[in-house]
Length: 146
Image 1: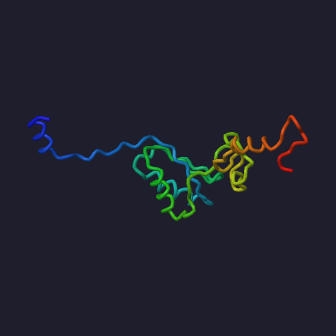
Image 2 (image 1 turned 90 degrees about the vertical axis):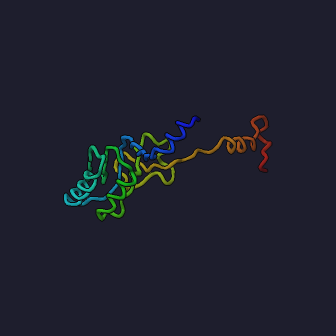
Image 3 (image 1 turned 90 degrees about the horizontal axis):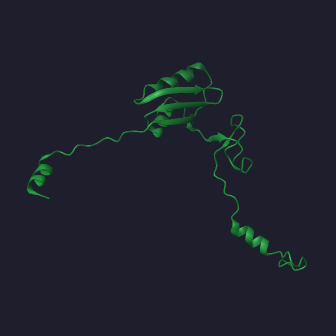
């Protein structure tokens, strides 16, 4: 590094570069009973910087926001309207989940065709191998449990 480079970096003021936000789709579950609730939520979210579109489905209690926004800020803004029970959309279509009838997945309050997004882990192969080794196919009378 030469003397000119040293003087250049010494004399320049470092600028803070702002990160560009990526285009995101934020889905939030929020209970809305009337047109007034829907209007309040729509106005609060649509006035945010970077929002391109706001779609509200009152039947499913779902707000979809598309734009260059931070999901946590959108959730905070919705909660700030008085909707304290607002949360990120916890449901996925039923055909996407590998075990839709596992415990914790089925939710009575979920819209039709949706289940709760829960990561279910199938039984490991090690456990299956242990169980299979307890019984012998060659000699059916040789059970290691007895």
